[in-house]
Length: 178
Image (cartoon, one colour):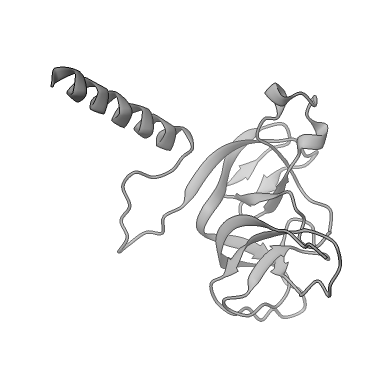
């Protein structure tokens, strides 16, 4: 019986360590605060990444072996729905070559300069690097798409001004088998 108790405690400590290591909250105030999962990332971009910036994984500039495929992120070029969409920066700012926090799940204020509809899927913008935009139908192309998440509410932007809009972040890859 004692061995079973010790084994149960060991399993609970390991599970708790995994949750803390990935920034997954163990306790959530569901009434007053959104649940946001955070991970620490390295900014491999030449410029600072501000809060709300949509970023992509930067595996291409890592040394290439499996052991070095670290949490490097980069400001995406203006390409719609990049497969390597990683999440949204939630630190005040991550300087070039610095380390900071990125949301990988939950409702986060996200940079946007284009209109979108509530409940629509959003991804990386084809016009504004580091901004989110509504995902348009791919029209039967053979490209896989990366989605950032889902728009929480409708957004109408005047003269492409920068706004911070709530997005339920959960990066996903949409496989197109055309």
